[in-house]
Length: 156
Image (tube, rainbow, N blue to C red; front, side, top):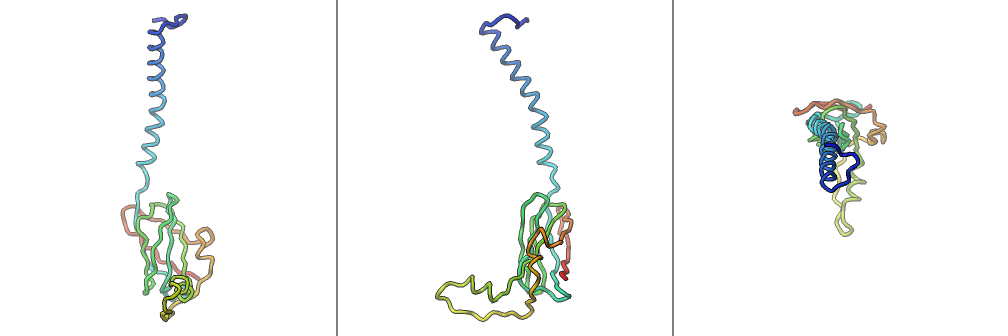
């Protein structure tokens, strides 16, 4: 069929159908590419270990892991210095460690008329503020997909 020079409604519909097919064919590689990128992510894993400062266990605070997907996940530091961060995107991970003074933290957390409960600062060690900044801490590791990656953090 010749579509040149004819402006009839039947020909417009056929041309329109052709354009629709061409558009779909051109869009197909893009859709497949997006699906592959979304589906081929490295998966997720967990990160755990201990946090020490000068050889002493950090007994309170948190560890934040910024995964390869750009999402930050946080886990608490336990009394024995252990930590665990769940569901971190696999790949290169940046870390930060925060261990604020427990007394200061409790003052902010309690309500106005609430009695002050004595805080156990036993074992708390102040650390440099740089470790609390994920971009300046210098802490990083690689998380493996579908596993618990062990990474001990020794702050100096």
